[in-house]
Length: 236
Length: 111
Image (cartoon, rainbow over all chains, first blue to last red; front, side, top):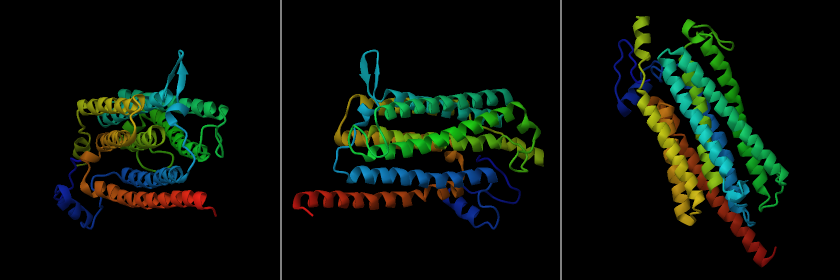
């Protein structure tokens, strides 16, 4: 993180430091593992993809003259004889934030070389993600039962379905991929690959706990995207 | 030399900061759910939704994704491209307002 040292190089804080780092005729992101820098670049491009989806949703919703379906009714659940608005979505949000918190702690324990805590926390994160995907599958099947299709729905503007399936589907895909990697990394942590510096499958890079942080960046990003989807799609 | 470098890199932040942020995220999510629960409408609703959303996103990026502790060279490379998204949003707002205007107009006047 921030407390790095490179011999013969003076670190300066703030924008002066940025100018010096950028023009230093060496690596620009000093003390940042290349995998981490690449993950950030990937997340930046992913941000643009999700932004395009959400902006096209904004444009579609803004330019239709038929009433948009009221999300708090469409996504409401009928439990114990009462209608609760957005109940499932609220639970999904809390599950995803919980898993984000366990991931942040996993990164911390990883850097402290606490193999057991790190592994269990990654496993907890994976289970949280799995729960999220399961609830999303439930939500999709519920809406499909009610007649929501990408081209029509019984609640209002026909564009609703296509935006809903596209945006939540793309996010759900990200979560699913994340869950797969979380399970793999939990195994690798327990097996001690990061302590021994065992090389990975895709790269000849030696195993290091920085990989947990890279995975964590991806997972937090998935949570971050959900924050925006929750606000714009479900609450708006 | 390699060993001392490793030692320095493993220094981490206290667990308290993560737990605080975690708790705050729960509270903020609860608040944004309450916006829907109490059915606030109009400007109040939108401003509350956006306020909680940006606060949550900022907390996640700053502390969970460690951007607060990263050097400016990385932070600025990541955050400046967001202005392009903001431009795109403004363009598309103008576009959908025009589209909805023409739709209403030709519904009234006829094609």
